[in-house]
Amino acid sequence: MSDNVSTGNALALNRECLCTTIDPAAMRRELADVLGNNDLYNSICATRPHLFSATAVFITPDQVNSMRAVIEAVESVIGTSTYRNVALAHASATAAHDPRNPGVFLGYDFHLGAHGPRLIEINTNAGGALLNVYLARAQKACCAEMQGLTTGPVALASLEDEFVTMFRREWRAARGELPLTRIAIVDDAPETQYLYPEFILFQALFRRHGIDALIASPAELKLHDNRLRHAEGTIDIVYNRLTDFALSEPAHATLHTAWLDDLAVITPHPRAHALYADKRNLFQLSDPEWLHGASIEPTMIKTLMSGVARTRQVERAQAESLWAERKRLFFKPAGGYGSKAVYRGDKITRRVWEEILEGDYVAQELVLPGERQVQVEAESTSLKYDVRCFVYAGKIQLLAARLYQGQVTNFRTPGGGFAPVFYPPAGTME
Image 1 (cartoon, rainbow, N blue to C red):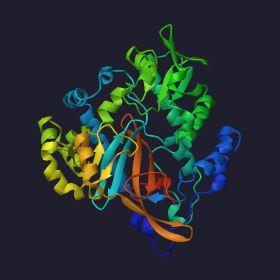
Image 2 (cartoon, rainbow, N blue to C red):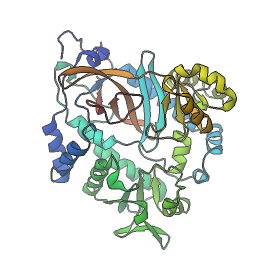
Image 3 (cartoon, helix red, strand yellow):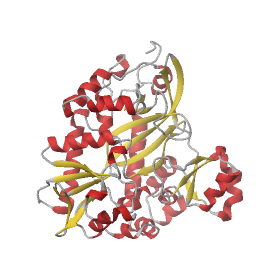
Image 4 (cartoon, helix red, strand yellow):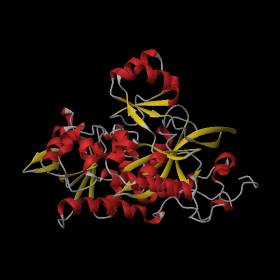
């Protein structure tokens, strides 16, 4: 790291620090310790070479505090009946079911540009939390500036316990003091999923804490005697990694019934997605007139106006004006996920524009991401990054970044992938 980089200058660190901070040997040891072998580490290296970046992202305590304030304001608005009535009015019928558990691993995604952190979306099946715990533990301090930095309000050594406690809280919220016996980590063809390594790590984590765990596809689940079951036994909790957020696809009919008839605790679930992750919800969260009309406190409105990217519906009636403004906009499907079918306005063609008008899209003001200079094959290159806050019950557990090139995060960029986010405790940054 350059000697002329002042301690705590996050912009300078991101611009000038080209050090490789990840320690591959430490990562190998971390995974071997929890799994008993190096098979998973070797598989990641062979099949997912851009899952982890070799460097870290630096931010400031002020940026963390700004993100926390936005999250608290969003949670406050979502807690109002006025907001919920609007959000559920355009949601699927399955979202009408109201469980007692809030849902695990909300992902609040921010771009950290020149005007401060701006929330660009919220996800309810945010992946990567456990992977980022092991990644952050495998970092080495390349200089004095990294000493004493943190990755979030929960200590790294405590995060695994924090995650297990979160699932136990989900269970108690729905089932009280009944014993939690088994968790199923469920996704379509789970072994083919890009984040399948995380499924394996969660399975091992649950088992270390005395909870049986299995990885399954929805086709392996059955209903019998008013319980959700697998060949290995009754399922208490479904850790839901599906992208069928409403559980409406025919292949997920068993889970659909289990959800509506409360035959298992499903987390995250359709109602959480409807309240948090449908991108149409950003209309209300970024509209000062609506927020005033909903009697939201002025201080919270101010926080949301400065911290949430302004978003509106794409309608054919406004096609001409939206096309004229397209270079300042980003277009996303309302129910989209994983950066699929999203377009930066200055890159779209007339053909794509027609598809956007025919689809259910939102237009969001273009908020440029932060940039991180990295070393790739002896060459310095600039990558974009976003910051994800993993949140449960309104509280941040962990911060992580995703480094990439192109329009959206993609895990295909040399030098890119998940990266730990480091910042000093409040009051220590110059």
